Each structure stands twice: as structure tokens, then as C-alpha cells.
Length: 158
Image (tube, rainbow, N blue to C red; front, side, top):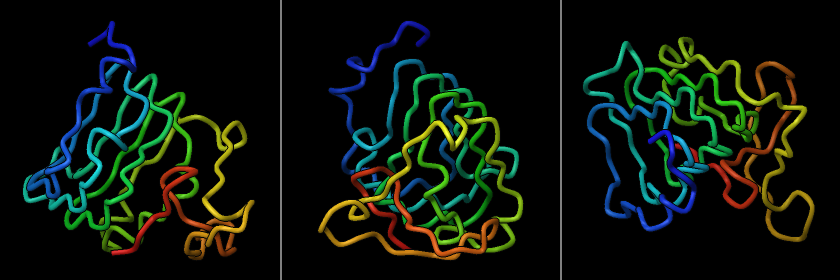
């Protein structure tokens, strides 16, 4: 997988995958830029079995630019770890609290990804006439923020 290119992933898609019973782990998959087309209808990660207490791990994905799981509405058990993804943006526009319960949320690790200042994290509808995405309170800034997975896909609540 060290020589994979983005073109290698274009024919791959799992549209019938709606639920993951245990966990989703992505580690050093080269060339993959988004999970949007790979898992277009993934709605639930159940977390019946966890990877070191995590239901979703996205770690050292050198070409990943966005998570893009626009259908994801629930991470039922376990925390989320998104770390060391040097090209990954749109993390500031995801409200993990819409997907997870508060105890799991407290143990999320979202670190060492592309600096938010270098990302153009703009949600749909902000700059044009289309209906904007929902807003939730950002715990760090104390302000209402628009929530989306990508510049073309709003985040839906659970």
C-alpha cells in the first residue's frame, strides 16, 4: 500500500456497508484522499469490540484530505482517534458530540493533523444561497459553528 495512488481507490466502493459492528481502523493507507466514496452510506459504528478503547482510528494517513463520512450519525461505543494525518482538513467542522455519548467523547484524541489555519474548512451554504449546515456550540471557542464533513456535505446529527 506504500505505492498506492488516489486513482487506485476510485473503483473501490462499499455502498451497501451501513453498519460496522466492531471498529474501523485506517493506518498508513497511501493515496487515499477521502472515505466519502469508499464508504458512502456508513451510518453506524457500533463499537461492540474496540481497538484499545477506540471505535474509529485514522492514524498516519499521509494523503487523506477529508474524512468525508457524510452518512455517519452514530459511534455507539468507544472513542475516536484521529492523529498524525498531515493533509487532513475539516476536523474543525465535525462535532463529535453529535455522534458519540459524553463519556466516550472525553477520551477522543484529535492531534497532529494539518493545522486548521492551513485548511479552508468552509461548510456548504455559507458563501452562497444554498441552505447552510446546522450549527452547534463549539466547546473551545464558545461560539456557534457550522458542522460539515466536507465543503459539500453537512454533518447530520444522531
